[in-house]
Length: 102
Image (cartoon, rainbow, N blue to C red):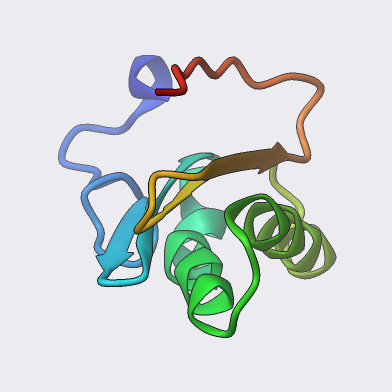
């Protein structure tokens, strides 16, 4: 997080494919252990799962399950498809999200 960031450090959030990614199929935003998220390309992986036909909720769950197998850090991801359907998943004790339908 920003409180413990080293001066000049670039986190995962501004890195396309790590902290965020979008395509015509949908988009994803990730948060958590930045180095692990960047290394694993968490947001890009979630969108790739959408592109393979998974719905937003399944893409989020699968991306986090794969992330959990590959990395030691905590992370969460929010995925939204091109129709506005959303899903989220995380491997941390909690992750706050909010959305409105309609």
